[in-house]
Length: 428
Ligand SMILES: *Cc1c(COP(=O)(O)O)cnc(C)c1O
Image (cartoon, rainbow, N blue to C red; front, side, top):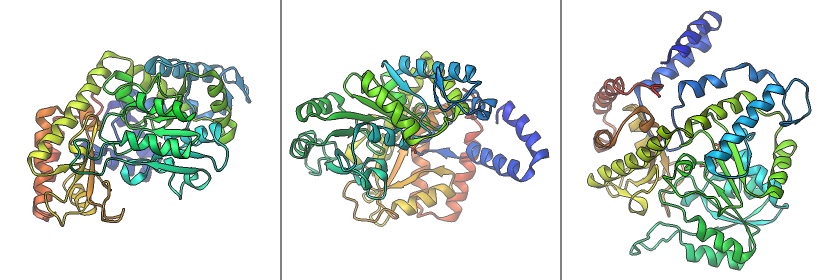
């Protein structure tokens, strides 16, 4: 644990022992286990502590220079700093740093660009999309009309389980959606933003790229940038971008920027989380450093190394591999009775944190699944490289091969706790 956290927690222990104890045990859990959830990361000490500041005390409804409350001088400055750095990082003209989360960033875009009942095109959740891309139980599916474009489901195709761009074009030309969404939660391949834009232009739609997962890679060139192709880019700030939990919306179009600002506040949100915006500024500052480019490149190399090591152990990787920070493992080839739910549970008991995930055309229900989603961002932050990915694959295979045998999981858990001492958290 970093020095600041240690000092804080010892003081909190005197003030509120119950809360301090829970937080301390969570810190210990993070330190002694391997985080392979593709949407998670470990923030730096400075990003973490920028959240714990007096900026939380202030109401700053509105935007810099146009607030509804007095006393916002420094709130304007910190928000402008975050906006400037976001624009520089992604090479765009306008940034709104106020969304509390990725889902709220998306909600603001829907509210800004669509009318109730308007249609939009997206990838369905079970193929790797996000719930805010048109699931019935989400605002996006309840108040708007999603039409979905497919992956290539023909196993004999060299692009099996990649986006079917021809079918995407056909779906869009048929339904003429007002907006086309690309960017996903469980898609391991490079997204061709230019192809999406060409289709958007052809059918008069707006292109929205939700780069929540790959933002850090896009910012550093480890994945192609959505600009200048996308009209609107949304993202989270806490995944590969390695900032505090939050959202961000960007565009190059001034008219769209105005609409989005209004839709987010007062349309969707009230007062912004200014302490989180301060932390976003710090995180964007880190992401602008050359070392973050090295980090992003290593994220991709590590994902590739892990995917390769699993493939050697007879796991099938959906789409045949990975181009980015994540992979979707189809567990059935290794063992046809192995489910995502069991794998997640067994691995957790061995100190390997993952999430079960449906795979394209998964015959099993969402609470069971045949897949496991694995990502390299958090382990890369800890300092693991390709060589250590071999070891991680070996542990995963040992646990799954033992069908969650208690003695095996216990043994691996011990080995991992020992291993973790060599890769301390908050060293960056
Ligand atoms: C994670 C994610 C989001 C939502 O982020 P939250 O901060 O959890 O609301 C939106 N879109 C995609 C593609 C994501 O992966």
